[in-house]
Image 1 (cartoon, helix red, strand yellow):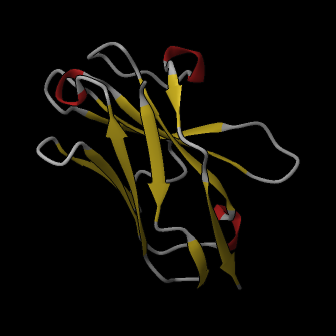
Image 2 (cartoon, one colour):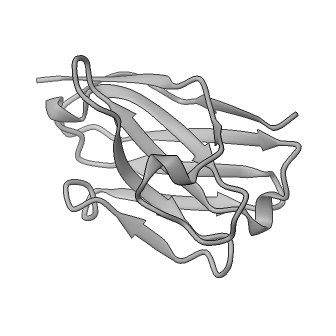
Length: 124
């Protein structure tokens, strides 16, 4: 059974950095596309970043591309989201997702497996 477990969320101040981790089990991790999404209270879940399983190419939403970095450690079956220069509008529950495909996507329907989410709160 594929499992994704996020960690690293918390309460920080604007301008701070935070690194989220997502440990993946029971999946061909190195060849799987991974994505990070977030959902703010009362809003739809949105794409933030993705990493291809083919060549580890990355993709970012415009709102975070100069501040967030997605990376992966295939030896540890873990994907990370380094978040810098955090803003109050980054406050949300962050989810990692995995696809049974090496190609990544910005569409959440592309990903078959999801973590339970980790809360990030940025105070002003």
